[in-house]
Length: 449
Ligand code: NAP
Image (cartoon, rainbow, N blue to C red):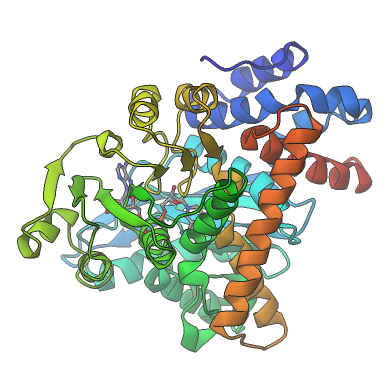
């Protein structure tokens, strides 16, 4: 890899490689954090004695389980379920569930690890976790999805609770799946424990703005990054990868701030319209018809569909990867810099490879890492938990205002911490260091557990 791990941390990193073999995504996520922590140990030598880094890299608990289910033709399928309860120093475990065939222990561990720092940055009392399954929901009927969710929860429920572990959605898990999971939890436990899952529907304990939160929050964060450079979204050309929950609400907020989104994608390819995309049509295809992004050009002849292409070839000033991990590599980054891109921020988790991050830093591009930039989703989940606990329901405007304040606060924390540790403008260092110090202090205060 091209980035550098401080010499004093090399031993820790090598030990992590040895003890977690065959987990490249987890290695990558740890590597990125350790790359920032050298100066922290110099300033806070007590954290070294307490083995805070070794401790934070070891999950508190890892649960792997069988998920048997039957499809509509009566054929039996066996999937694997995961929940990695990584760190609960700040509060109950909190983090989404991902249903995608690429899910394995490495992917869940990388996501759970990132979640610890992200949740700390929000300033809310939540620990870090992640879970999911290698189940592929694509092409499955509604009743197949329901049976899968019920089987998944029949094992997972014993590990959850509003004061223990509170999952939410992620790739392949939206409000429909959260509904089936919540229903099964309620049935097994005989409790209407609203605070056990977030991302619920508005009629049954959900919160306004949760659906929009990650995308809106990302745009609020980028707005602060641009502001720090004397810029704004107005008149900017933007590219957003993906067309799922995060991507759609990222595009919506950009448009409302005067930016133009010219391209978005799914795993098949990307669509491009230099005059700006019609977001209502994208929503219709993705949220209602659950179709492919290629269908967009059937009604919008001016737009082009590029199957299997690199969306980062499209010239833009702001690029927001919102699909999946490692979707933007060093070559893509060079193309973006060459085309005049000034800001990149991660709506997805770890979409940017270490090589690409280096290209952005060297090229003077403002780069917002996911653990800061996409924290609006989990922060609003915590607001949903607050509303559940107080049996209250806040207005859209009030909740969005809280979200905007939280994102501004995260930006400030990252910006100031990066400056304090001698790397002004480096949001990767700012996020890693600020998140780590907060969790490490709490771990030390709670004793050796
Ligand atoms: P989603 O609604 O399921 O959408 C995922 C999007 O990414 C879809 O357009 C999907 O295309 C595309 N995609 C998935 N895997 C891909 C792959 N291997 N190659 C290319 N495209 C792929 O999921 P989401 O909730 O928007 O999550 C997107 C990212 O944001 C993930 O990294 C997630 O961890 C992160 N995130 C989500 C939240 C949240 O609140 N939802 C919060 C923080 C971070 P297809 O439909 O073709 O698969």
